[in-house]
Image (cartoon, rainbow, N blue to C red; front, side, top):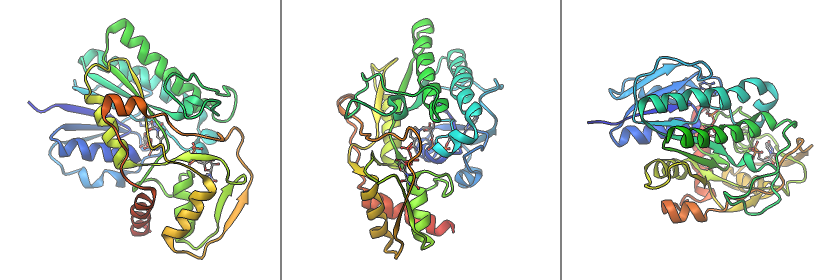
Length: 312
Ligand code: NAD
Ligand code: UDP
């Protein structure tokens, strides 16, 4: 019999690629999204697919859902710009919303994967960040609504695992990019690519010395699927992303190179609590999932640039 996967946030950037991947492997897919930050065009190509169902719903409210075999919980706005505009919605999506999906997992006797984030490490004092690091989050700062609610979301998954023996796993996702990101969502790669395509200057915040490690979406989806499928990881948390760390200045230079543009770099103020260094320790993902990111930044940026260019 075909397995059914529920993808909450399936209309978003990562979620829509995950829906594609699951459909390719013969799953029935139920995509739930309120299209707060996701875009209907991300799943437009799936609407006529016989094994794809779209349910427009908000996970903050419990809704009638059919029993499923697997739940991927990716529903949450993820752009720092949204942390300022929608803090209550974000905090409740990652807490009340997570609770609703955990309840559905218990009722369905399903496996569940919760998409957490490198933001649970805050502005890290340990580098690179292993899963055992408990983080340095400013709970009252502008990122607190996201960081702290993802942390509580993780706490809830652990509580459900202990009390209901639920098979729930958590992925701590590090910066991921690729086609179908919203060009206007404010994150650095969509910003830089949109600016380069429009021959506008690239806006580096601060002096550009802060670092990130950027993962192409196909590598992320492979990691999420592997984490859901691996044996023996009930209740576990695994970092997923790329550990190829670069400065934001280097990223701006790479975008200018890939886009072959005359755009220049301008410097703007650094947002409050912007993490200075970030790189996942991927030892656990490598050991438990044989996970290895494979798409180079140059190749991934080019594919994303081509997609943004087609969308314009
Ligand atoms: P995205 O905004 O493109 O996708 C999130 C999706 O969730 C959107 O389609 C949005 O409409 C939907 N959503 C939000 N709140 C909802 C609600 N209350 N009810 C129903 N749907 C809701 O962002 P993304 O980058 O694809 O992120 C997907 C997941 O991965 C998120 O949980 C995010 O926190 C996590 N994550 C992403 C990154 C990254 O770099 N892309 C990094 C860390 C964690
Ligand atoms: N950033 C930047 N210019 C932009 C957008 C972001 O220099 O136009 C910086 C931001 O300050 C941060 C890094 O790029 O240091 C990554 O930002 P993003 O919002 O993509 O994600 P974060 O990792 O901060 O959640």
